[in-house]
Image (cartoon, rainbow, N blue to C red; front, side):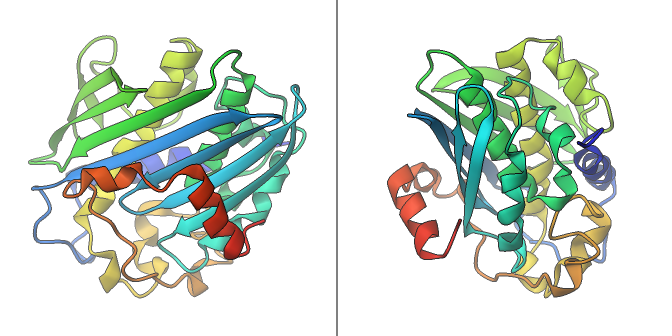
Length: 287
């Protein structure tokens, strides 16, 4: 059992520094500042399982989490669109969630197995599936996040759940400028997840979903197709996940042409449905 989920917190701290001083060594996109980052997460309860799907500008993942009503009995995942050639290697470690008690806390999964050996986004999605399995009486849940590109370090971030606006943050760097009770809250560093869960299971989950998206949205600044290997991006991520681990990063080559701009084609993020997603990763050998 793991004592903490330090990989994600460390990566968040690095991203926070980048917001105020982006590395000049990384190739940037000239139109950054004119677009919008979008992320959609879908969760659906089925008999003895929860299926989930996550899509944003850089990723498209699906997860199928099995349970017996008390603990996780199995987990499989698939990467339908991934940024690096090594991302698929993080699918088998998802099985290490077996035995995890169903819980609404997103902090329990990183204590059950090391998140640094997982794909961050697939692991987040699986953790949300665990929480969805623990909820009674809710068949499906959909999160939609929208974050315009930063201008002079400032932006806004919104989160809708099932079409209803739950959160709207004004952001300055990595700090929420408002509204209360979030004003002055730094998104980086240890302790955020613990604080978020004091808000209650549903609000705490929404806050953590939006926080993750805030950091990932920074990726819109860079031209990843001009990076041959993930090692060029390692100073921002460190060893926070499977691909950026010391063992994998040397062979983590770029998957060119995998970035989507859902700010310019927002309707495209609503598809495909679950059946198409799972058929696609089954054909690709997802297990």
